Image (tube, rainbow, N blue to C red; front, top):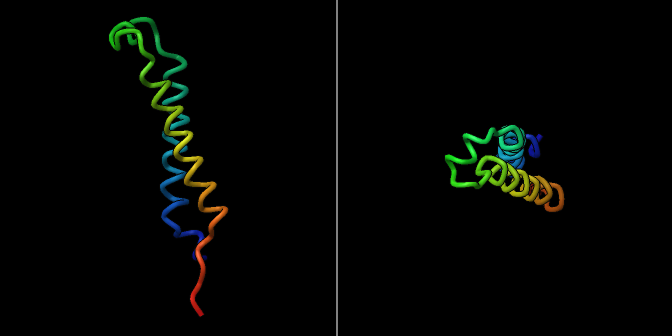
Length: 70
């Protein structure tokens, strides 16, 4: 039950979900959005960064679980 409310899991899952949404939006950006951002696919790169950071949080929570004090 303690793992369910671990902030690393909650934050990691939210960042990962937002990363998926932004990565999909960035992959589907039209030329108008890319031109407006001066040739940079901002949504795509931000989505990839959020996926990486969210993955780091989830791996961290898995490798170093919270401990209960006796």
